[in-house]
Structure formats: C-alpha cells, structure tokens
Image (spheres, protein in one colour):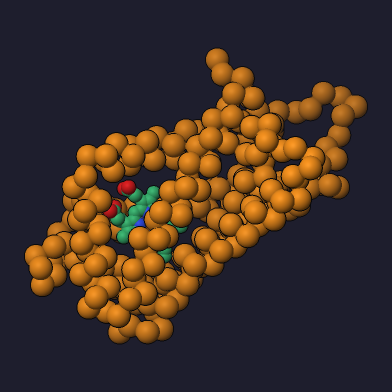
Amino acid sequence: MLTTLSRKIIMALTGLFLCLFLVIHLLGNLQLFLPTEEARLQFNWYSHLLSGNILIKIISYVLYLSILLHVIDSVIITLKNKRPAPRYQYDQRGRASKWYSRNMGILGTIILIFLVIHFKDFWYSYKFGNMPVDSKGQKDLYQIVVTAFQEWWYVVLYVIAMIALCYHLIHGITSAFRTLGLYHPKYVRWIKYFGLAFSVIICAAFALIPIYIFFTMK
Ligand code: HEM
C-alpha cells in the first residue's frame, strides 16, 4: 500500500512532467497562428512527424500513464481527506488558503472533462477517424482543428477549461515544489512568482488559439 506522502510525490512528479508537456504542446500549436496555407502544411507535417517517431511514441505512453497516475492519486488523496476528522479537530484551512487551493478536485474534474472531449475530437480523429488530406497527401488535422473552433460554444468551453487549468497550475506548481522539499523559505516568493507567471502565460496562450481561429477564419 502506498502512503499519502508517496502518492503526493507521484502527483508532484507527474504534474511537473505534464507542465513540460504543456510547453511543448503549446509550441507546436503556435503554428496555428501562421497564415492559413502555411499553417495547414506546417501543422500537418509536424503532427505527421510526431506520430511516426518511435521516441515520441514512448514519450506519449509516459504521458498517458502520467495523466492516469495523477488522476488516480488525486482521487485517492481527496477521498482520504474527506474521512471525518477526529473529535475536537476542526477544519481551519479556509482561513489561510485560497479558494482554488481548496477546490483542486473540482478544477481537476473540469480539466478531465475537457481532456475527454479534446481526445475524442482531435486525438481519436487523427489516429482512428476518417480524415481529409491536404495538398501534400498528409492527414489534414489543421482543418479538423479550425472546423471545431467555428462553434462559439466550443470556444467558450476551451476558455473555461483554460481558466480552470490556470488556477489548477497556480496551486499545483507551488504544491509540487513543497512536496519535493524544494520549497526553501529563501525562494518561496520566487517559486510563487514563477508558478503564477507560468500558469497565466501558458493558459492565456492556449485560450487565445480558439479565440483567434473563431474571429479570423471562416
Ligand atoms: C487551443 C488549445 C489546444 C489545441 C489547438 C490542441 C490541439 C491538439 C491536437 C490537434 C491534438 C492531436 C494531435 C496528435 O495526437 O498528434 C492534441 C493532442 C493532445 N492534447 Fe491538445 N490542444 C490544445 C490544448 C491542450 C491542453 C490545454 C491540454 C492539457 C490540459 C492538451 C492535452 C493534449 C494531450 C494529452 C494530447 C495527446 C498527445 C499525444 O497523443 O501525444 N491539449 N491536442
């Protein structure tokens, strides 16, 4: 049986790995901001390159495993924390902690729902769906993404998910550093600033993609 501490260490390590994935995923998706035809060929070529590479395949399996472990451990830790506290103890966390720190489970659930929809519409379509092809005969994933973001409600869904992800990361990054014992009092302020800047920049950039596509492409 794993202890709560080892589960928290697994959550911290998988969470930081997922943050690294977010940076790489965002860099790839920034190609969507290029002029239409250039974006189409480059984005499709990039997706093709990733899907054919054995090293990327192995990293992808590590990624799926990390998402699974992160979710499973969070559910187990949340359920443990929900057990009634011994008598004479009462919950004072509300006084010191921020609302998003106390609602990591709800924020995580919104992100999980987002991921299920995201996987179904993009990942599943790319791997197993009936895809259109571009002028170079590559699967036209660009067209699938642009078509999805023509619907206003779909854009709203992405923006809501990115707001949830932002708060989840703000708490998650500082929490991970604390769990891993890297939270030296001297650096507390800098870790907090780093976590805040990272979360806001990454999530704002992700949210801008559907907004940009919705308003500029028909
Ligand atoms: C507007 C923002 C986003 C766009 C346009 C986008 C686009 C895509 C596309 C087209 C794919 C399929 C590519 C493939 O499987 O080769 C994909 C896969 C994926 N996306 Fe996103 N994504 C966005 C945001 C996010 C966010 C915020 C997360 C995480 C919270 C995320 C997590 C993933 C994961 C885990 C995969 C599977 C990767 C793999 O199979 O290796 N995406 N995304």
